[in-house]
Amino acid sequence: MPQEGPAPSKPPRIILGIGGGIAAYKSAELARLLVQRGYSVQPVMTESATRFITPLTLASLTHSKVITGLFASPEDASATLSSAIEHIDVALEHDILVVAPATANLLAQFAQGLASDFLTTTHLAFTGPVLLAPAMNTNMWNHPATQANLNLLASRGYHFVGPDAGDLACGMVGPGRLADPAAIADAVTALWNRKRDLEGETILITAGPTQEAIDPVRVIANRSSGKMGYAIAEKAAARGARVILVSGPVAIPAPPGVELVRVESAEQMKNAVLQHLEPASIFVSVAAVADYRPANPADQKIKKTASLLSIELEPTTDILAEVGRNKGDRLVIGFAAETQNLAAEGKRKLESKNCDMVVANRVGPDGTGFEGDDNEVLLITRNKEPKPVPRASKREIAGHILDAITDLRLSRKAAEL
Ligand code: CTP
Image (cartoon, rainbow, N blue to C red; front, side, top):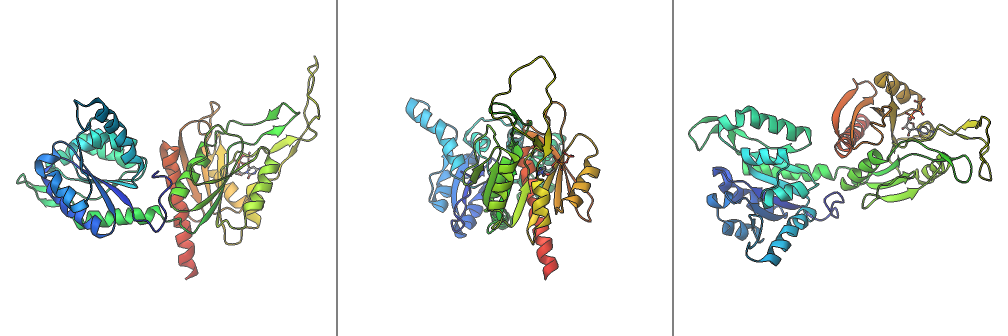
């Protein structure tokens, strides 16, 4: 699967999507360059792309069967079924989706999540990075609808190369010309290398809630779903890191390729963290660890009475602060779940727990930021203005957090030189 990433020595497997524009002929040169770099290339052409360049040209250059349209043979029911499933296989078996030329129509379809043919359907099923090389007439490029689609796709983390400005096939001069195939191939290589930027790192992540026993059947817990920590684990593994995920009880599956250590209480989480800390070059404390636990959990189930019941609570160990105290040259990243004063509280926790970065997020009484699929965070580092990351899926936010972590790592390496 794209999230897992292939073995480091393996070259990337590219889906080359080709849209129907005059620049489609340049996709042949792009295919040639990608193959020359040792990449495996699966061309997927829209119906109209086949009018500008023949599938045979692409097949000859890539030594792959070229996929066009959606269904192999409309009269053949079994072929229809297998082709309908094939787009999922194509999506799962490749690492990067490159679309060149990405026409105005394709950009609109991608932005809207339409699935009208093999390419747009594969795009929807694909979870890896997408690189778009737009090409179109200048007026189409400048149209507010196209610009809005581009902005939307950019905010979702799509990557772009071009378009260049210059003489267009339609006779106009301006932006809209497909980027040079060599520049597109370079962008693919940069994307692939970037995606492996955590190779050699071991990341220890805590995630989810903890449960503190009141008696054998009752616990004190919180609303954390684990989604944010699991998303970071998934993305870090995809970017080449060894990931050890210490998780409290959650309802979501462990990401592929991640070493999962299940715990329940804050005490168990602390022990698991200390046990796995040694190889970790990066510690990311996402878990919503209970600050207090019942001081004297009952051995037997507490029986109901008419009177008030008090439970005496004692503080738990602050795992993040403990790791921060003995951090060595490890990068330590904390989270700050706040209902108010995000920046100030995040900064305070950055200092008090000796972190290199604190990711502050707002939690609401309804569980926003805890249970939802989206998040909106503030990245707080030393000597820099806090960086807001606007609302996005937790997977996308995870990518931004890992980018910030690699930036911290790079600036530390630069300072050492
Ligand atoms: N944390 C931890 N161990 C604890 C409590 C918190 O490792 N016993 C970590 C969390 O994983 C998070 C950071 O500390 O990375 C901040 O957690 P948060 O609950 O926001 O802050 P607290 O320090 O508990 O402070 P408060 O609850 O007063 O806001």
